[in-house]
Length: 229
Image (cartoon, rainbow, N blue to C red; front, side, top):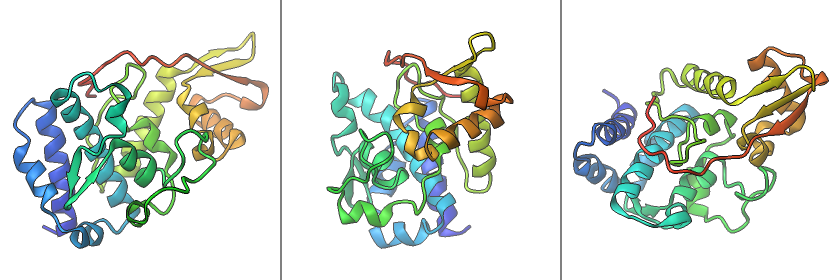
């Protein structure tokens, strides 16, 4: 078994134990004691980076939510996750690594000029917009949690995208509108802008988007933990 697969297996086992409400200390200890050089060496490919960090984000959101009550929005910014001798926040993982250090309030168009070099060195080379259909922040409108693997990542992310968009989108043929998740607006730049956003919706929903206007539904922040697919 390669080191790369071992590391990602640990992230998958961590998430599985979270789902089963089992003890996670062994996996947390392994991750905390990794050397940063080993982490970087084992997560060389885009698939490996995305797989590992999606699993880690989804696992640790649940862990932190169970351990720390009443954190509110601080749950995203507090550095409560220890990996390879360093402490990460959920925002470090989502916006720093998976979204290649994009500023979280820029609709996906601007880089975070204050992002540390450390996070930049761990980040993906190119944003895969489908991560937005995989990362779960514990809200009712979030996509469900799945277990991702390097070997099947592309297929899994495509399935997650189709499932999320078909369940969260409503087509009104009379009014010529498509109402869909506000995630697509908040991260429009990650999707390549409005034009590419329409291409994605055309492919998934199988409609001629040039005749339709996009509207965005209200996002429910109501807590919905343990939403596993």
